Amino acid sequence: MRILTLVAMLAISPMASAGIFSQNEPCPFEMNPDGTAKPLPLNVFKLFLNDRVEALQATTPEFQPGSTTRLNFKGFLRQRILTDLKGTPSRAAMVGLSADLLRLGRPHDVIEFLKPTLQDRTLDYRLLAHLSMAHAALGDWDLALKRNADAVLDGEPPTELAGTKPEQLKWMLKIDKTYTRAWLLSAQRDANPATRPAEPDVPPLFAKARPADAVAVAQQMVLWSPLDANLLWLLGALYLENGQAAEAFDILEQCRDRKLTWSKFRDQHKRAEALFRAMPKSPSNDDFAIPTTPVPDETQKGLFAIVDPLQFAIAVGAFGLLTLGLFGLQVRRWRRSRRSPTAH
Image 1 (cartoon, rainbow, N blue to C red):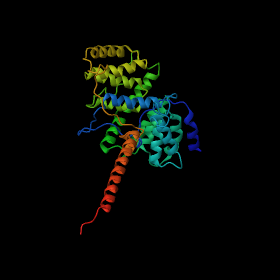
Image 2 (image 1 turned 135 degrees about the horizontal axis):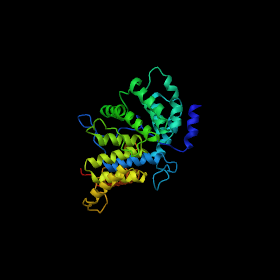
Image 3 (image 1 turned 60 degrees about the vertical axis):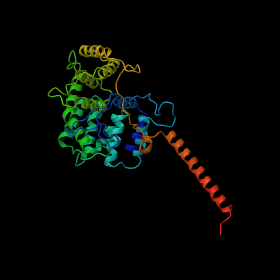
Image 4 (image 1 turned 90 degrees about the horizontal axis):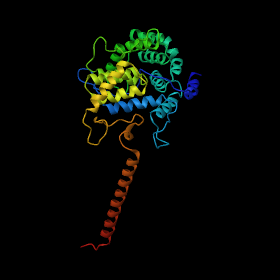
């Protein structure tokens, strides 16, 4: 019954999502030898972010632009959920399913689906984290904080996660245990008019100490909670502190599009814009002279993740014609040799 209910609920309009631990979503960050992470290039980060934001929007189609067959990130998520719901899900499948449901903005479904797991003798850290973020997406901050505490204090953390390297998993767990509670408390404070500061600041995730990989940490937090404009503001402020004017202005422009109007934000946005306008333009006259990096397609697996299917088909066809021609040439030579007189 629970599975049938989830299938039916896939038509409900999406809401926000956040923290993800799933074999369906490998960690995209490259690690340094000291255990810190390298930030994603801005163009790569923005494409990951856009996929996640669009998946939460009810009006987003499920196919890539100009195609009626090639699924985008949202369509791929829905297809995978329907596939995983066939039969009784394993624990790993429950982790992946709840993560995908969060990505599609189905916090009610996540709570209903995972509620029975709270009676398990051994509590799964990943499922508790997903429950925490489902409650956060609904604005139920007390339960979100409780499930977060349950995960940190009583949950059994994963020792491995398919598609994610051990050092990446260790880094993700460190972020969750170190910063998620501070984010939840900050969001709870700002959601209540009685406790919200008159002039809010960026989320105080690094109030005690700023980590060496603060930009990467902020990027991961934003990808976990793609609709949180304050987390995005934090990322833009970090770029600005680092002197990365183009990146700062790009991110803070997105924050402005999300209707952030606080005076500190306006000051940072104005400063980033001034620094950016003073930068030399790129040779191609693009507004942002930011190096780009090839971006992985999250909806593709195997060979077609790196090779366009049409180009692959053309190459195979050309190879086949070449092989056929060579074979025909060999046959003609063999026939001529058979007709030639044989010397005795």
